[in-house]
Image (cartoon, rainbow over all chains, first blue to last red; front, side, top):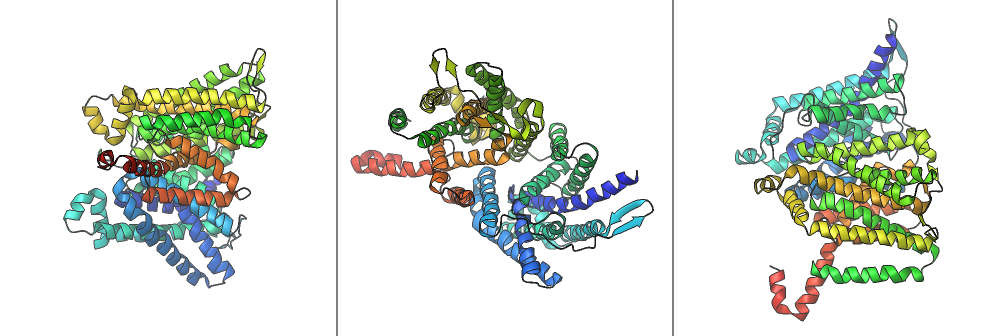
Length: 291
Length: 321
């Protein structure tokens, strides 16, 4: 039983990171109909930036973190929006899907080719000392990750529900044309969403860097987990992406421990397929209108 | 489409004559190009004509490859394996097509993407059947009694024969009622349904036929290499096929030929640096999406118009709208 609780905590800790990527993914879909197939690389690029600032240039931790977020929001937020999305948004969903697939390959193999094909180690942010809670052993890293992600997600939620910009985002997500008629600058909001997403993935990158090693191809798995999370939980709801992320994290940790680590990716997939067949809008999602 | 005929005939003549002068390696590259043409035609049908995104083309291909390879170990004739593999791919295409009826682009992308990963995991872990990550070696090439296709040149012509069958059948499908229905669905599902296109049947078929072509390509791919392992059928492979079709030109008959040619020749030119090749490839796809959504065929169109406008200015004004 203690094992089970420990594994669940470990699962929630990794799932919280997936959830951050998944929430960004969902935000992009809602306000700009972008299915970002490069979401995994949106985490990897800031992770490399973090290595650059923190490990190589030896910035203090907070400064390195800020620099990483700034680089990420400029390149992956404003840059991608202005260069790719603005032009492709008018052409429907498919061209953007293909362009983001191209973007993911571009980022992945540029890092491999021009930086390193090797895995870069990254020092732990939180101590890995075990903490004993009765019979349960957890590490500070797991608790730290969960708390960090919780704060980020709570702040985001406050921004969306309590500020004018947040309300405008909700309006655009509900009905783009109507929001535009009501005087909301949709293009600017799309930019803001991209910036928010890039900030979220940068935070996820900072948490994931010590857990995995930083390598050019870890984005493939991360991107997939974010997709799974978003679809399982609900493609059009932040709470859905949160739930989905945690679920994917816990399921994959438990199945790797109890069933088979060979198929650790398969169990999340099985849930995914079950959700698609039974409740395609996701566990906690809302039915979308036929667009 | 009449203008597609001459280049097609020219390409066929080249395909017949070239192998007589090529060395063994170049012959292999040309054979591989033909296999890719078959696969790309399948994906172009699903994605380009019917507008259904598929990210599991490599998985359908794997069904063809493994059917041929596994049955070949038990001395079953190659064609039997091929037909079985194609039937298997077709059936799975139907099964995966079902969610496509209910859901929109992004979900379909996920379902197919998930299918590719599951197939990869099964191939890697079902060791008794697939040989696991070691794969299967010495995949047999077809033999018809005294006629053997074991030599590279003979097998090239064998592939060419199947390519001709695939091209002809795709041409026929696209010029029948079916092709028009596929395009109607791509342009506007609701409108297509209103004017009486049975969405369900055609969407399923667009998926299943595309999958069947992938199975055919896969069945020919295995004996061409002689050795298969799960690494050849990853999600990345599927994405490569997607880019191949996009590069060539979505929903254009000539597209798969151009796409397959570029995709096999580019890595040969940039030998030794796969990373660089993929970077160029990815950049090309992004630029293509931004500025030339019609793919390389778009360039071809421009050249064609240019040549026509010089010879007969009266018709060109009409074609330029």
